[in-house]
Length: 194
Image (cartoon, rainbow, N blue to C red):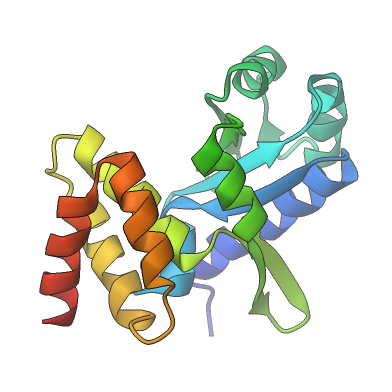
């Protein structure tokens, strides 16, 4: 049986996670890979990592990633300093890994504190953001993008359906108000859960 694009993304994510930890950083996986693990699986050509790594360890991260990855160290340092994004490319498959520096805002810190280990293969796991945080962050991105991304909307609904019985609803309600996405959350709940 051949590997699927989802399997390929998991393989690369495991390599990146090991490199971040080897460089002395912490991380969690977000974006479409997180929503696929917690909702409806779908293929993706990019993986989102939120990382907390001392800027002085960027060269160690680049070395740990190895020659299969194209890393712009200056861009990565900037992302870590400013809580922005730097793209790294896995060259064998032309897969993009987006590194988001931890912006250290209240919601960012909450996401980090709620990350959990998810077994993605027998004996292999990744830190992944909580399903609630996946929903909230995707709603914020959906809103910021003009509420037109069907993919973001489907991802939100997939997580809401898959975790209908075990989501922390009070956490979702409180943070959706703080992030200004409470109306979108209410709409997503109606559409996903009936």
